[in-house]
Image (cartoon, rainbow, N blue to C red; front, side, top):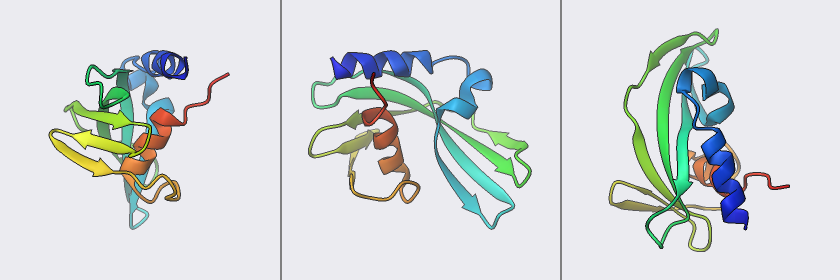
Length: 122
């Protein structure tokens, strides 16, 4: 049931990036205060691979210190996420273990896992 509800949340966030990027940002890295790069969830569905829970599409944007967009990557980077132990993020064919106890913002893979697997459910 939780998987279905989280899927609905991800699908709701699948609006065009220009309209939903502020709401779908799951990780931001700052570089000297003058620039930052944000990773956003563009799409998400229940995974077709039984070893994973969700398949997502990630986009990347670069902002200046005032929040203006400097660059928006046109690529759509696919990833798969396993919520249960061992928590894992797969990019292409590489699997990355997720330290579920990491503090938010420390690692983009943890933040992706948290955004997808810890989505609020009512």
